[in-house]
Length: 224
Image (cartoon, rainbow, N blue to C red; front, side):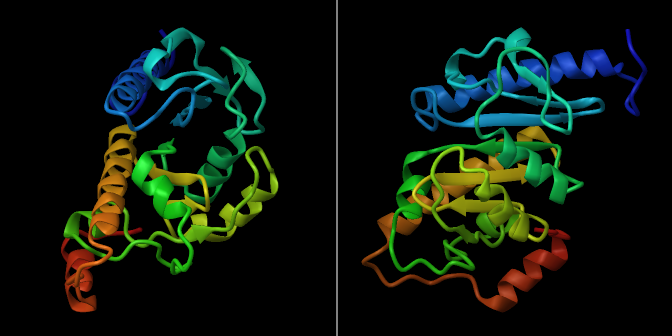
């Protein structure tokens, strides 16, 4: 059965549950058009390593038993070969001890924003709603790197400790959170805010004030 975790569930049972939840969330994201083809990847932290969706896999057709299981050196322990973007996840986990799951998508609206010129590199999306501030916070821009370029890891390392979510230029967002559900929900909120941002480009916009943002951070103990 394996050693029992803090919630009374054995490590093996917890791992199986996480595998099934990754598959379920992946299917949902795919069916709602947030992950096309074989794009995007999802990971979750375990007590003895971490799970990641395999390379060239479709999030809508994942198999719990074939998810990649890796150690913290990036060695494959079981399952199919991991996504070539495994290093993105590993560096985020390394910098964010409270992160237990990461979602990286190429979703349409957030990817579109990542291609725009003139973005504020310290904060790509304005605080249009309280929910964006609560789930994402500030969204810095990481300069463009080709897919699989390990130099991207160092660019991420410089910002991941103080930001739970990052936008990769001409690519898409990578979002970490304390749980798998929280990472998925934050990714969805980011995508919706990107959609609002694009819809409102030619309209006068009233964003949240610094005082309103400070109130949210205080009331909800935000740590982004």
